[in-house]
Length: 452
Image (cartoon, rainbow, N blue to C red; front, side):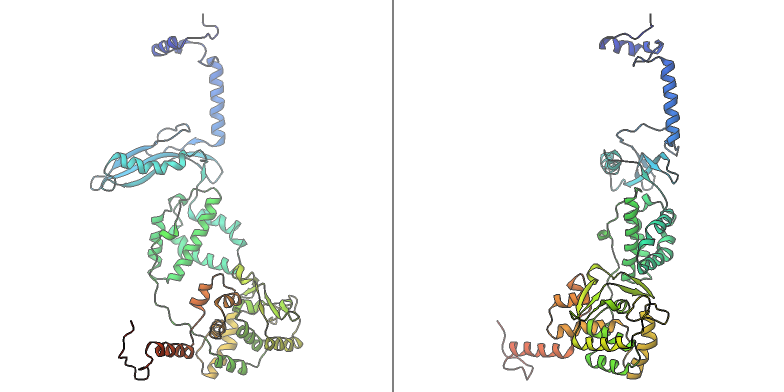
């Protein structure tokens, strides 16, 4: 009687289903015998287990639902201050590459913030939108420390030596101690804000920004590699207030002339002259090669930088530039090349070992003794750069020209950081302003007329 499947009308099908009559059939509703269906079901279960899509039973998640649109479970917990929590399931990829279904529990807010269940569900729907999106794929999970180890091996080694050392310092001193055991998906905007607040107690605003920049770079790489990482907005962080910066020391034209006159030992004398006449960074001066000198065109090409005796790329794309070589500098360099000793790397300024000079050692061992002898306050190599930019602007050079000379990506950096108004020119401008506003009483300093 039940040897083969037969066609059943919809109304009869509904009645039979209500009576449970199909449970006695030797075949299922697809026309497949129960034995074959059981075999295929067992094979499918084995296939799922082989792929690692196993049940990860946690508190509040006792079963594994099939992939479908999730509404989640909304729970209100707490007596003194009730809070809304949302529970949902998510597929993740563990460190061994296996896909697992795990239960997530996220805090949505307090009942005071979300007084009704509908408001809590709306906020929960925003959390579930990523899971329910058509483009959703299982994400990888790891703690911050676990991912950092992979990032060091596969990404950090490609950075410049200076950037690599800064990142290692930020990770070792600040980020790993505070975020090491936290999973990447648990690092939220509030978590980053807590880190900023703790760092601001002992670090300057500039250092805090550098640490957050390193963290942001790591999290962006993690997201691009498929890890589950929350969206962190830097513009939403409350940063420490800007403190009053100390005035930047720079050499005057007279001091530069005295320093060059007192510097007799080579190659340091030529290094100081190049820094003063071109405004190059200390690393750019130490990273010059002989073939960077273009006497035919009267130009000097900036293509590299030196950092603690290692050659690396310049600070930014704008730092790769060509600057004019004035006639005075051309004569100095041609005279220097006559006594220049060749080295394997063809460095313009090389140590005895044929390596680039370290700028901080040049300052400590050669520049500071000269400054002490001349009774000039100690400054670093950057004082030549500040002096060049300030004098160029004081002589009437446009901000765009000075920006190109210094290799800045933004002219505001040139005007805001490297250009110091010379007192004499400022005083003359103010005197001209006083004569315009107070033409009759400028000498007395008292005005009897009002400007309408």
